[in-house]
Image (cartoon, rainbow, N blue to C red; front, side, top):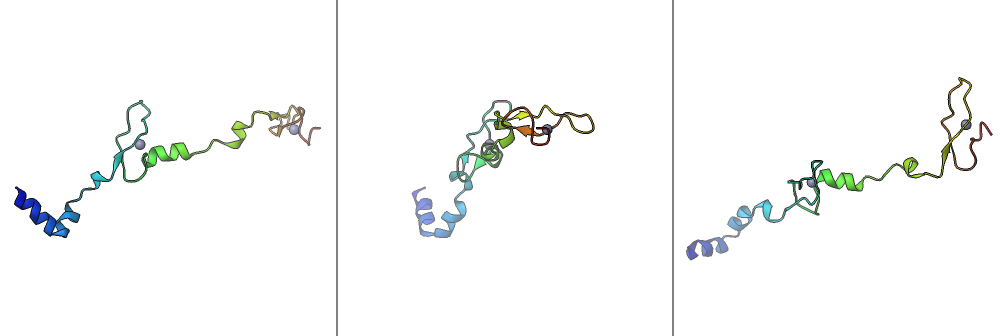
Length: 95
Ligand SMILES: [Zn+2]
Ligand SMILES: [Zn+2]
């Protein structure tokens, strides 16, 4: 058995060819929608492309802005104005 190992050490080609990708890749640390551990393998980092995107995705700036309120004015068509106002209750059109 030791002779086979010695032969592999002599031949650098055999080592590079035999080196599997699984050695460098790790299991994704993310979780699936069902709460299970993600089984995807990642070559670099700790998360696969699916969970890397979800974490990198930033929330919409409009949804986080809670200080602004919808304008209480109405449009010419009689519909509620969709403009957001930070101060007061009406936008610059209905002020
Ligand atoms: Zn994943
Ligand atoms: Zn308005």
